Image (cartoon, rainbow, N blue to C red; front, side, top):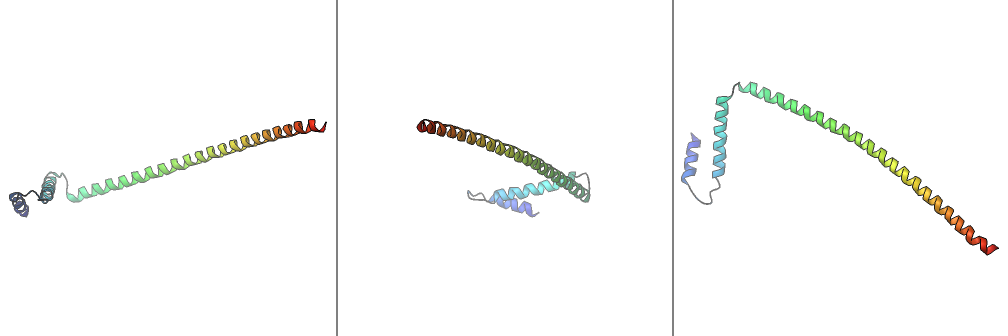
Length: 120
C-alpha cells in the first residue's frame, strides 16, 4: 500500500518545520474512515446514495417552505408597519394643525388686544 510507505517515510523524517504531517494524518484518517464505512454499511452504495438524495430533496423542500413562510410573515409585518406609519403621520398632521390653529387663534387674539387699546 502506498499509504504505508507515505506514513513510514513521513514518520521517519522528523523535522521541526515539517508541515506535511497534518496532511498525511488527514489522508490516513480519510482512508481509515472510508474502509470502516464500507465494512459497516448495512446497504449497497446505490441504496445509500438514493437515501441521501431523498433526504437532500426533503431538506430542500423544507427550506423552501421555511423561506416562503418567512416571506409571508415579512409581508404581513410590513403591511402592519405601513398601517402604523400612516396612523402616526395622520396623528402628527392633526396635532400640527391643532397647534397651528391654536397659535393663529392666539395670534389673532393678541393682535386684536393690541389693536383694541390703540384705536380707543
